Length: 225
Image 1 (cartoon, rainbow, N blue to C red):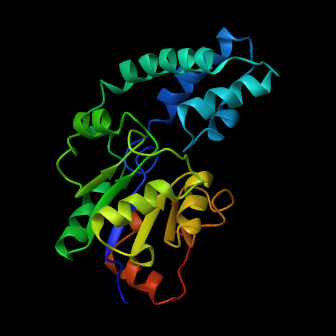
Image 2: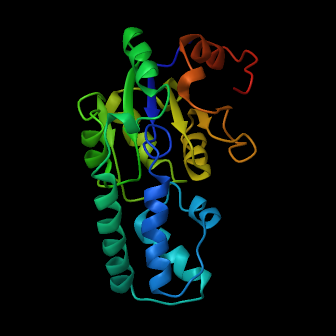
């Protein structure tokens, strides 16, 4: 196989940068419970469900809350987050994304979203990509968070391809682990020292093209971009 049959994109951090919005909202919740929370800790929540993210914040302060209380915090967090992301526009799409999607379509490579975010439909509509992807699997359709591969396996299944025919594009450690656990090639978007389990890591999608995918599937030497 010289090319994948499909590319499955994570949303946050790959297509748009929602990290600042998440950080603002989670920091507000951390302050409510009296927990110190910084940008480094926010990185640990990438690709993790809201419920598990709030549990993690509480664990930083050795705080116990009931599931109902945790859910109440996540609802308040989400309200803050949605208020921020609702002002997103196509200008917020990260570099190289639109061009790479166009190249994939020109080569009949299917595209899908595989995101833990329940706000995926809102974000895609705000940035004008809601009609672009053949399949969208998000946090509303899964029961297991990354690093469980459920979101990517569902994406592959709905596309009609085997896992090894799909490439995942991910910016989070948990997402890379999920892709590899699902038997898929993975392009990490971010820092090589962080996403070391990915097959290759790039700064952004401006350096990823069809020849890049061919090399990935031909096991040719790929250079960090």
